[in-house]
Image 1 (cartoon, rainbow, N blue to C red):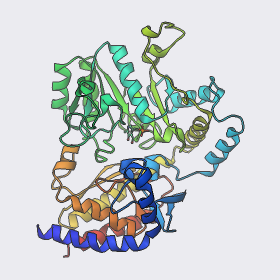
Image 2: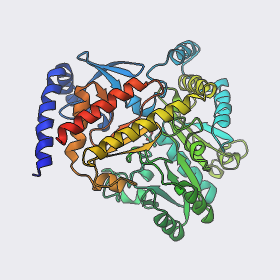
Image 3: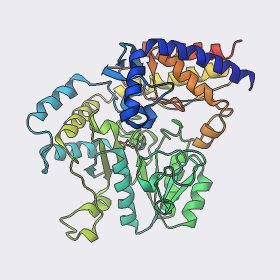
Image 4: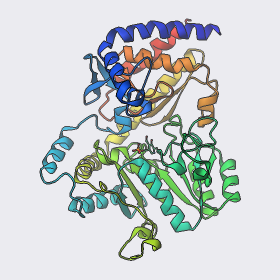
Length: 452
Ligand code: PLP
């Protein structure tokens, strides 16, 4: 054991004790939960050691756990709550709408209005279809790209998380090959190729070698480490994709309405052929997802023009376009559209925070790097600056540092996800004071690990 790992373990033990003293009720809930919910949770990424907190309430930037502890939340419903938890005007709009029917099950006026709004605020899209999640949006987008190009292969990035759809559930975690789950036959990922983010040579090789329908990627790698594209990378991806006759799908489930109102396309000025959305598009309510593209591609879903099911690409689902999600999403995106100036301050604040936190890493022996763009922040305890998920995962100094940071922050009233990868997705209502408190705690922890 190195001196550093000894120190990390000592600190983990110290903060685990403090955590357990503060969270007795959550510990009891975990004991009950593990009997009826596998792993005691509804989604494995929400678990942390020795047991997670169970949250009773959220409002604005804060959440409260079953023991009454208050936390500043930097996870924000998986990056959903860009204006904080439960903005008043959104909740009011939804409550009013609910009395007129929660799910109409017919074409409705709001889907027309919301689709029109989305085509105005997202660049390069003329038509929209709503789905129930980001996973679904990506599943249908891949199918649509295959239908349009008549090709089979899809290229994705190492570390790219597009949801649990079979065809994209590969290359998420090291070793970035083979099915990511039990029960996923290799045949289901036979037509999926995985290349490192920020690596044009690998991308070109894959495009040259196979009949590629689409490259699907996040403009900024999200759960793969909040890693920014290198200057010019996205433009070169666009050129390569065009050269080889494939489509470019931007998975903007995290980046959409976050990096800019028009997402990564707008911020980086790079055109995608298909954009998939989730999270923020649902205004904080469940059932958040959409596929958007130009008419020529979207018309492959048109049952009027293509009455035969075999002549079109399928998309649908019971709760698609439900009134609750559309009301919330429409209210939220309309607000952002009328307050576009918010993005400048939002991005400036978190670009500054990232710079300051990264400087702290430099001061403390470069045991970490802080990556990302705007309000997507990744903290990495790696030897080198991560430019892709391979470095983010394999070049780690010590996994214990991730657990320690998470645990320490929990005891200081700060939450983010996960304890294996440190990602922060602040909202527009986190203030400079919140940011300064976060930076202070981050530095405190570094100073405990590396005693100068
Ligand atoms: N795409 C990206 C970039 C995501 O981050 C996620 C979820 O975190 C998904 C797709 C899947 O979305 P959902 O969880 O809504 O199915």
